[in-house]
Amino acid sequence: MLSISYSRSARPLATAALLCSLASLAWAQHPTLAVKAPNLLVVKKGGTATAKLTASLNEGFHANSHTPSEPNLIPLTLTWQPGPLEAVNTVYPTPQLEKYAFSPKPISVVTGEFVFATKFKVAANAEPGAATMVGKLRYQACNNESCFPPKTVEVKLPVTIR
Image 1 (tube, rainbow, N blue to C red):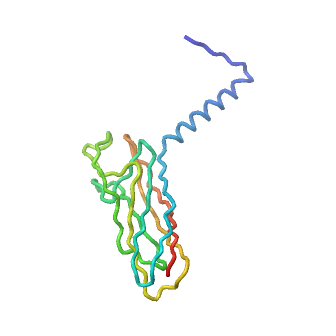
Image 2 (cartoon, one colour; image 1 turned 45 degrees about the vertical axis):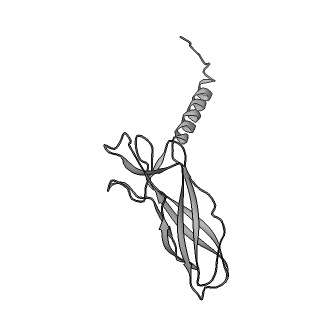
Image 3 (cartoon, rainbow, N blue to C red; image 1 turned 90 degrees about the horizontal axis):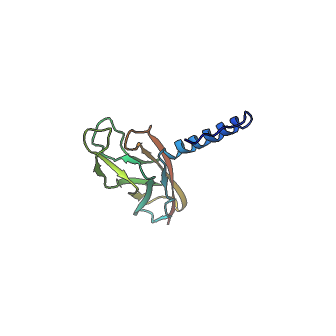
C-alpha cells in the first residue's frame, strides 16, 4: 500500500487541489445544452419562411421530448415572443423511447444533436429591414439516474424583411 505524507504547510495546498479536482469533476457531470446560432432568415412581406434551430446535449444526458411519456416530466418547448414575424407552427425533433434506471418504463427523449423547424409568416404591411425574433427553449435534462431542474435558453433569430 502506498502511503503519502505531507508536511503541515503542504496539507492545505493538497486539500485545495483535491477540492478543485472534485469540483471540476462535479461540473463535468451536469448537462449542457448548446444552441447553434441560427442562420439569417430572409422573408418577403406577406410571405412565409421556415427557420431551423439546432441544439445539442452533452454525452450521457437526454432531454424529455415535446410529448413526454409521463405526466410528471417537463416537455421540451420552443416559444417565440411577438415580433415582426408570427410563429405559425414548430416541428419538434423526433423523439426516441429509451429505458432509464429511474423509470419503470421507457420514456420519450431527445439526445445528442436535434433540430427544430419553425414556420413564420410575415404581415403584408411589415416594416422592411433587419429585425430579431427572440425565442425561449425550455428543457429538462436528465442522465441515467435522475433529472435536473428545468432550464430556459434564449434564442435570437436574425431576420431581414424585404
